[in-house]
Length: 519
Image (cartoon, rainbow, N blue to C red; front, side, top):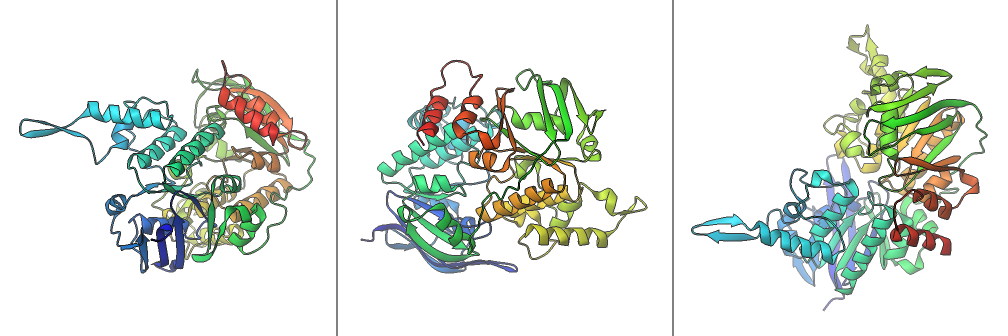
């Protein structure tokens, strides 16, 4: 009997113009957490989709409990005891939590010759499942009424409900707060103790080294190797992933910003549950980081500043002039850009090409007589963006939905840079992006600030927030709880500010603060 619950041998998969996997291996032990790492485009999601039956492998074999299997579709994968939590959420928004979890396998009751969904049993089973994983949600609640992080948690609960022997988790913490991450890790530990194997895909080094037993690294669709996590460090993982050493991770240059380019006074949302009386300044040659927990209203504030959400009161002074921004078009005309948090939902135009996605926010500069598109001029800009951002693609006409998440993010950033903004708002700019792509985006941010641009960066990654920012403005429940110099603060202070206005006892936040203090 093999010590491995799963073996994938010599797996190859090609798409038109691209060999995504080239004889890749993967071996998973029973009751272990096995991290799968690599840059965007390395083949991590592709090999998992071959395992889960979404893609058909071109070559290789798959063994489960020493028995060779063929997995034609996701249903067969589930029958073999394999479940998957996708990076891009698959929720049915107009259905309840219970209906999402048991979709396609509803409990039935028979009344005469007819069969009906047994909603009572389904809700009872769902309640027991949510209690088991300590997820305090009403099974009857609609998915559209949940936050992104809550939807992520429901997707994880759905995978667990299959009682699978292998659960694939593709970037499971990308939308979770630090407290929710801790809950997920407890859940994973419980699954390990029951003998369940976890294949864990993440770009977050700290998570990988903390939770995994083994790590397999891929690079450009090839197998680099497999190591016990105890033998690895962040530096070793990075060098094996990218094939080179990345020195000075954030590479922040010395800056002394003084001139105020943007001033926001007493900004209050039209939504009474959102932000109130927000005032801050942004300086030229500065990266202003915005920290806070999920629900702090950081994204809502920036979307209002960009004209997406209405405000009740407040004023914007931009380059010493009072301006009004009622729509995104107003913001763009003033040289303000916004890279949104959820690239899939509000960033990319999936059915359009890379070229179309880059040019769509700045079409005016590519028009002849304001009527005809100057394709040659647009192509020149797009090619320059691909070279500068190191976007991996075979053509400018490739549909953006066919790129990896990191390359999609680079295309969206190229879109705004083509508009030459003076103020760039980046909402979670490196979420779900590998370390090599992060380094490239950090370098571009530093280069832009060096050219006199100003950047507002929302980030939930503490190391990124502290490593890239000049100042950090922390929000809690729609208010500013404090602003600190990045070079003079610590994680404990930021976490304390992030929970400053919370009502009642917040044990999770208190425990997280204590953990940071101990570190």
